[in-house]
Image 1 (cartoon, rainbow, N blue to C red):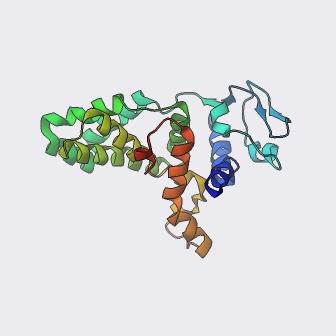
Image 2: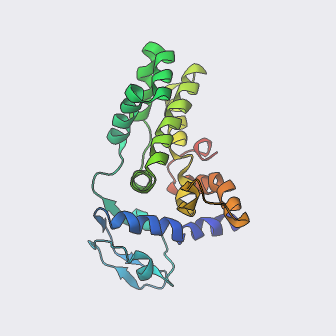
Length: 221
């Protein structure tokens, strides 16, 4: 199954693992269970604090599960954190203010939908990596969740649909974690291979969401 193979390959993506290692050099990242390879080798004990040598420790090993399902970080991007960011954008960002002004009294629905949104620990961890390593993308992701919620409200969607589309907005660029961060440099010139990766990031993101196994197909799409 090429899709299953592609999803398995995401577990060993050097760019995402490198982003985790970089975050671990800036704040504590711990294992909540032992990290064991497919061959049964214990690579990291439970309770280990990750360091910048993460890629070296995992080199040559294949993991049976996604590494971030075995990790914890202080102050992850949970629902409360996202709610605070949404309110900051409403108060400070031109697009956030525009959305709230246009919605009027209905603007509270954005916060209500976000608070009722399905948000598993794996999504929280990935968005924590985004906030740490790609802060402009973090702000952009919350803004796109707000835009998605705005469109859903205007379309007359119910609360559950609004919550789902806001989750999709938040995670729509999560595939960017799985490609080189060089794309963030305005002076960097993409190679043909890099351009292909950039074009495919939404497909990568869809597979990442699918691997979480908590969202309906509509969110993956």
